[in-house]
Length: 358
Image 1 (tube, rainbow, N blue to C red):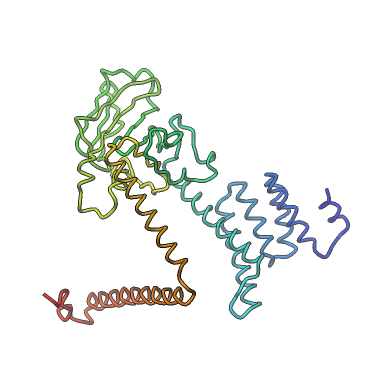
Image 2: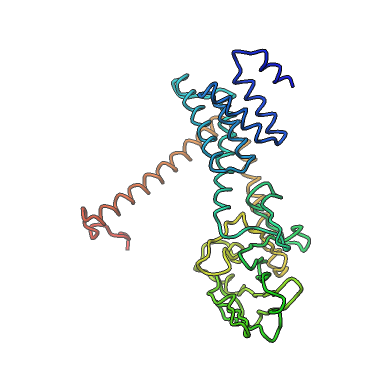
């Protein structure tokens, strides 16, 4: 109401009135009206970063991620341009820094949303209800738990006609798009191999799966059952082989989790997976908890040590750390230049002994 009075009265700062009303309307989730005010604001003062930020927030609320991304980037650019024009080193003032930070967060969110919507799968609960909107974020978040009463519900990855979930030792697949007349046990044929899964319907000849798996399983431990929701398939991971595989540098906990169900599929990122280690043997869980406790203790001791340093000692350590980083960067650059020179034939590879001390 007060914004309406201000607009009727007229003002030299009408763009601010429209911008502020856009903010209020966005907070009330009236994004269409918020966008109208933001566009009026931009029309009146095109070089005002807040106007473009208001438009970005409105487009974000309308889930028009590509346009929102462009507006966030434009608002951020205007902030930087104004700061560079005002000061020699481009130092931002308080409100420019605040806008720039909000734009960075918006750009990241828009990129994540755009990437998520371009993927051929969605993230759901066991009932197939998408968790995307419930979380307010395209990802469930990186969760790790070791207790039976860990996460409230498991995260499922849903494709066109099936969804799958996993713990550290098992994969569960649910084929939910099977007509009821095909859910007959004697008509289902499932083949399990060390790294292969085939599931077919004998009567109709329909093939649901006939693909190479992402990782190894134990065929004799794999099973399938018919339940009310559809055809459930349980794959038992070859945990022992994964744990004792010394060729991989990653911690075995990360290796236990499959990034995809089948080879060649788009891979999940770490924070798209719910890491449920509650089914691991107690000895392994205790060992991992101890490792985490030791790591936490080490980090705490390091923080306490740093807090005891004098300003001069801190500066000395920072300078030494910076020098090591610069040396590592220089060494990497030198190595890249050397390899390119060898590849192009500018220098003879025989001049470099890979191990001169042998």
